Every structure is written in C-alpha cells, then in structure tokens.
Image (cartoon, rainbow, N blue to C red):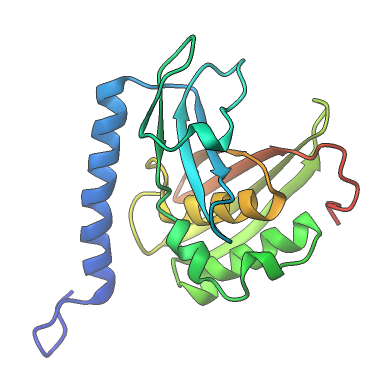
Length: 205
C-alpha cells in the first residue's frame, strides 16, 4: 500500500524488512542442517536478554546461557545455532515490563497476548487455548491461537509474535522455553513449554 503522499505504508515496510531477515535465518538453518530444539533461553546479561537456540539433540538439555554467546554451538552429539531472537527488542520495549508482570503464568501469558494485539498491533486477535501441567515431571505447556498477523507467515522460524511471547515467558519464568507452531485454516497455534522446577508460586491460575 502506498499512502497519498507517496510514502509506503509502515506495515508494508515492516513486512519487507521482516521477510529479508526471515529468509536469511532460514538459509542459515538450512546451511547447517540443524534440527531439534526451538528454544528461547534467558541469558540474564541485561534486565531483558535472551538467545534463540536452534538444534541440538532433543534428548539432551539446552546448554547453559553462558555457552550461547557464539552463533554456532558445538555439542558432543549435534551442532546447533544460537541466534538473537526476533522478539528480544519487542520485549525490552514492552510496557509494563516483563519484570513487573504478575507471578501467575496465566496472567503473564494474557499480558503478552494483549501486547501482541493492543501494544504492538501485530495481530487482529489472540486467545489462550490451554495451559496445563504435563505428566512429564515439572513441565508446563501453554497453547495460544493467533489470527490475522500483520507481519509475515506465522509458520516461519522465530516469527515476531512467537518470539515476543517466547522471550517474554523465558524472562518471566527464568528458564528455557521450547516453542512449536502449527497453522490451520488461517489460525496459528503457538505452543510453549518449560520446566516449573516445582515452583508452586508460579501457578496456572
């Protein structure tokens, strides 16, 4: 879209910039043929900082934050990548800050979803589908739905919406958050999973 003044619409500009970044990330991942984890890891270097860990063996834990400074991360069993998340800057600029969000995980998720639609206007609508503790020891999983993304394909690696929520949850919970995405009939379902470490104060309600 071009405005009457001849200036291109900001959304269209954002779309163009994002597509270039997404294409480069996809090319890097394809080049190194990394599979496995898709995890947002808080580093603690600043009030809000994180890395996006891609690859590694699924039966092996994500390396500690201090080992994720380099883009290429070598492990004993499989190569992986450590990238700056697309959503890191969005989380840093978000008001209220993630550090000021409530302790309850449900409230954190709701605040981040409102950030997607109301603060950044990255989607037409969002909703919390499910949040529950898993049968696996001390694991919690939340699934959200997103419709009408204003930037990019929600199925792409580290999409800004998925990244914003993933980084926000990682910083709020203080640990790695794995993420998956599925797109069905125009609606994206984003899942996030993390260790609760038996922390009863981080309730689902």
